[in-house]
Image (cartoon, rainbow, N blue to C red):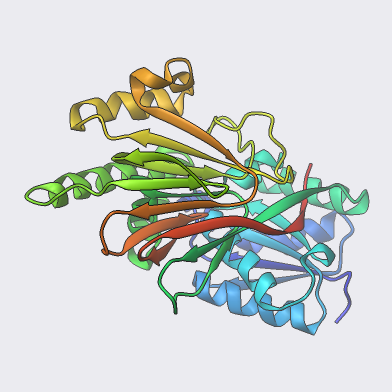
Length: 332
């Protein structure tokens, strides 16, 4: 297989109903712009996307485009990692066809399929790439497979959101929500359901207290509503690590303390318009820059979900994050 061959891996029902119709247009649009070396692979699940990516990389492919949302992109990335080929030799693209596609937006990729393909053709010809750090997440319980991501992660409410946005049945209501409310519609519904679930579960049982350790130093302990990990500047939809390159060699934790259920709506409102950074103490907002490693530990032995670029990793005892490699991403 030629290393110059472009392999596009598309999940069939990612994103809005309108996005579902993008798949069959991909190859013809590449041909329209003179690229005859594009092969489309349509898959029905993230697991299939990961397996197929692994197989293609092992056979010699080095340019992969993920056509889906952040969950699809993450599993394509992990397929690259599972191949044991040097990530620095792989070029990965994000064709936006899903929800919460923050990496795609930050790379300047248009949502319109015709414009997006045109950008890919030009960017590949001119070798426009961005170096992006890869973060590994490891559970404190042995036997749990480590996960990798390049965009965002998190725990507590943020860690539970993928449960409500990434199973197969929910893909269909995501399509409707995405059509009605845009890319972040499914995320906000998932966040609301996560908040309701957390509220119900806390009735009659002790809250979880967390210890946060940054670069081997304990920096905070307490109760949190959400912990958000970002690799760098992911744009206006997650406006915290502004102007930080995705390949900066460090990453960030932004934590929102539990100030009670009545304060939560205002905390999230101020978080998503970034005004929470103007009065961090008032809204229980904390930020930490991580150079080497981040460790979050609950004060109980219950399992807890970690959000890994829109998919779920179940951890126990602790979760540790650190940069382990970098990969080349196609940019505008």
